[in-house]
Image (cartoon, rainbow, N blue to C red; front, side, top):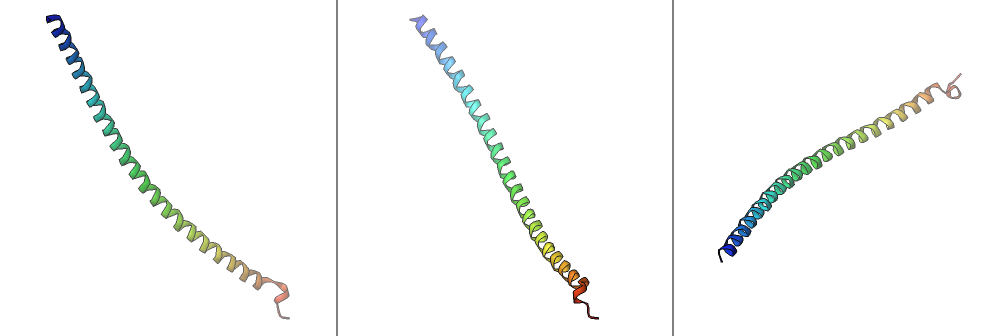
Length: 86
């Protein structure tokens, strides 16, 4: 009976050790998950900021392109020899 009690105690000790290890692993995984979620949120924020900047750049580029086309058209009209009055 003493041998069985010792074996049972050994199993219990091993079980406690395994449970402690699993608990520690779970805490590590939860910490990594939280860090990854924080990084994800930061990246999403950065993406939004960059998307907004890109949108403003595209709008500005479109405005400049329209202005350039209009000025080129005006320049062509002003320098077109057929339009000059003699």
